[in-house]
Image (cartoon, rainbow, N blue to C red; front, side):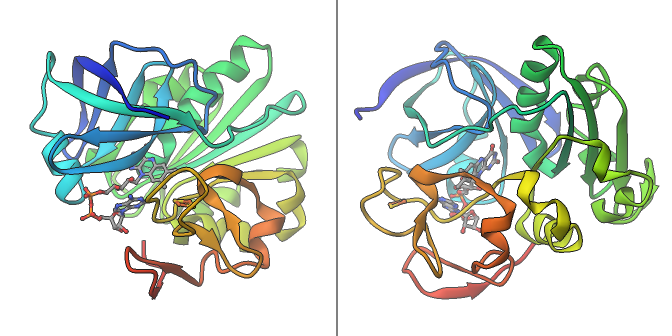
Length: 256
Ligand SMILES: Cc1cc2nc3c(=O)[nH]c(=O)nc-3n(C[C@H](O)[C@H](O)[C@H](O)COP(=O)(O)OP(=O)(O)OC[C@H]3O[C@@H](n4cnc5c(N)ncnc54)[C@H](O)[C@@H]3O)c2cc1C
Ligand code: FES
């Protein structure tokens, strides 16, 4: 798939380290799918869609910092939409997100509401300053917020918010966020893993199922094509939450 050129229409500051880029192309993505964003002369990196024509980016390193220098009128290369998306099931769903991982869930929740589903959300952030998409989620239904420092909502990690919820009430659970946050939730709610769809993150190079960079041990699931949305019961027996491979293929412990 050749990259398409796209002109940035608008840049929205969501939080000090998070910006949304509205593009001039609607690639008709499903929530959970991603796009490879080519920042010319720098790198090509995977980003989830936060809406039909938007990506929401956290500045963490070389490519994302370069993207933060871009403004309306600048151009990017796009390859996508890629991978599988979330599948809406049942009538009553719960979204569980952490940080910028809330981006594809906001998109999913809006699609679910437009189809008449009941949507509740549990969202975790480091602090008040990091909160994003609060109004988007509140427009969908009950929204529970946790912050690590207690500046908004429940004081503690996202799993603290589980204590007030009865997960049996939900037909399907959707989760996206930092790996250790997702692992914390998935490992504490094992009995619901068969109805939990997780949008996960690995080091992507080709994003075409060829290079093997993103494969999960032990069964070699290629996250770039068979994911990034994977049922949580499959993750329970995998490397997820334990280690991940970096750019050179070496194993490193999961962080964050
Ligand atoms: C399917 C998927 C969807 C994603 N969606 C979003 C999103 O919506 N918003 C967002 O802010 N981030 C998202 N990411 C993460 C984003 O791709 C990385 O933050 C980005 O690639 C970092 O590049 P960098 O050069 O700025 O940072 P670097 O300095 O290169 O690295 C910072 C971190 O990003 C990881 N990373 C670097 N390059 C890649 C790569 N090619 N593939 C995967 N991880 C990489 C590194 O392992 C490291 O942990 C997603 C990743 C995947 C796999
Ligand atoms: S990134 Fe190459 S196989 Fe997935």
